[in-house]
Length: 221
Image (cartoon, rainbow, N blue to C red; front, side, top):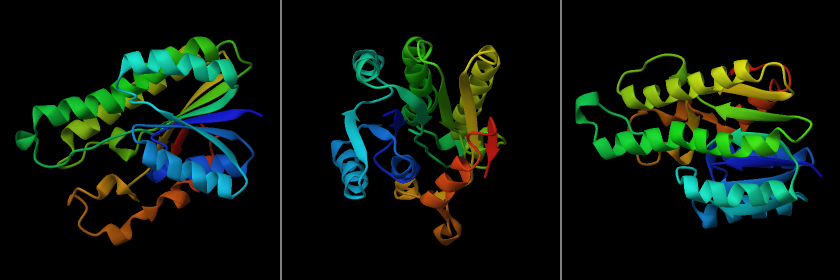
């Protein structure tokens, strides 16, 4: 059985992807910082007849990534790596706490670099694989009160597009997904979105992306 590895798999879009891929018959490797939410996603998958494994891992921590990812590849053939872990802080740029700058950059771009760079030697030994980067429309255009969040997502876009060019003559794909706001726990501690009723459910967004992932490298939903 081939596997799908998903970062940020405990909640939101990552959890929705996990359930969707499990329904397609993949063994899901759930990666995230919080064992409780990972276990909740695992329980949902297994209650529907799927298979999943939890791996508590902070994508920002290079030592953790270098220690745990090789073990995953020793036991699983990875079909898709969904890069869904992300954080955001919103408000006027001049009020940004430098700690929040570091948190966004370390997660949204540093986490991608860590997971991709450590996993690539193993992926290259497989017949093929797809990296699916969940970037959001913040990687396409600047937005008010989202300066550094957008900066981190522009960086993620640049990374993924560059790797797509670097590996264009190989069976390794780098797919970029750009979507607007979703109704997920991402917004629970923020008043940046005034009317959350207009946000789409994460499972709807996951379906829209998965409909195109095998055909397109640039997906906007």
